[in-house]
Length: 308
Length: 308
Image (cartoon, rainbow over all chains, first blue to last red; front, side, top):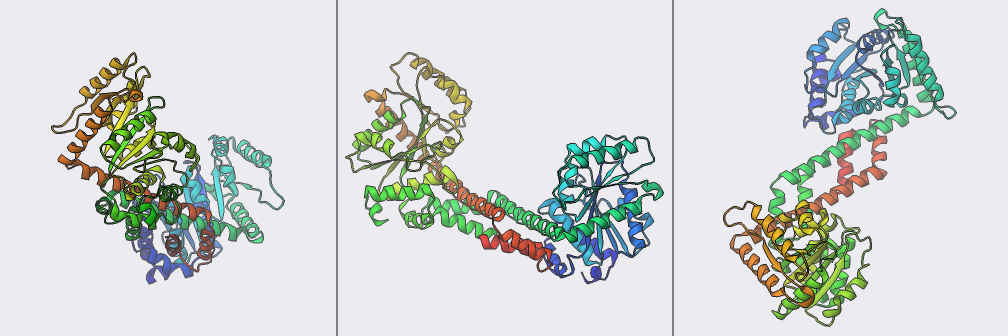
């Protein structure tokens, strides 16, 4: 814990593994981290496979480092059944930043975590924040429910698209327009990039907005050549300023914290429910009730108390 | 409470109303009743509308009274949205037994009760038992999930059928063969009664039974003329003897008590869950978590504790 606070990469990795696995020490770790959290900027980054998320993340991290930020990256794969199985992936991802002590890159899955990814991811963010990161990128694949949940935990969400993949249409279908603060049309040097750009701009134009409401930005990039990365950074900073100015940053963070607390509480209740059905306590209580030794309300109450 | 124990009909009625409405005094009432319960014979009686349930119940109660039993009747209507709205029904039902102090007849619905009918009905049975009834009839309409649940709370379940209503086929579809200990083919003087009788016998014959397992009895009756009521009584007594002999009575009662305790416990958990989502406690907790004043696990734990 102390080592992780001092930025020891292996200590940070161990803590995130603990978060993923839903270890019983988790509440203690969370309590110790709490005073050091709540300040980092959390940026979500999502998009279908093949749009260039890893490359964009890589270049974006480079730009953030150039500005002096300490950066954490969480690559969340809800479908992966392997806890810690992303170690090879981490090494591959880390090749550009492997020797940089100011960058932590970590893949994670949610196996075993009480409350799933919705609860695990913000805890992992806190670990990285506790280790000194002032910016945490959360990268998710695709636009499923899990990704939308994770994206909703970010201060700013980037949605990556690429030309000619039908992403623009899919984006609308999946309701991604509602979660995107910044669209990035990556591979902007390819055929169809302009069409994708204008499709997205057109859809954004159709949406009704209250005065002062954020209008999603659209940025063109060719991440593989480092082009457009500064524009992404500018758009993110602009959104950050808007969040602060409109009190939206606090509102989003409180909403995020509420979702997190709720996910943990519901997970706990679900666990208790399972114990009631599977345990022997119910049977023991039933024998007493049937014999008239106790009443069912008292039995239910002591059953619940014993599970608390 | 004391008045109900002495058999004051109005005191009994008030206690059952309290059970139906899920009054907060319920746990206290249940605790006071517990020592006086667990001895009454509980008989379930179900069937589609029009098969003659009320008439059969009426005649069956007469036969039980003739043997010196004190009898309680609970007419359960899961679909009724009216709590206590069955008062008129009670008066109509009671016409034959209205002046008999050895019979309580009561309709009930489950509105507002934590855990629904599955929890309310056995409590009402306990009230009647506490008032001195040694036999309690629980009459339900139809063969829906709620009726099956209620039937599963009885020591012995009677299923009423009538000829020419397609009941025999429906019975199988609804899986009623599994809950019936005794079938009554009522209106046995009508066309098709023999066919219905043999249909049911045929279906019972198809079922595989372990040695010593109960084989459902089939009885013919014309309740409106009082015919066959003694045969019903004989079949019920035979089943009772089988239950005792095979230790099945205790097993059923413990299973019933377990279902009851579980329904109350789950109802309590469900209520807590609702409070978490609707209350201000979650919002307050979220503000503290977002500010780093507490961690989400501690917040979730105190949220759950405050709801206990």
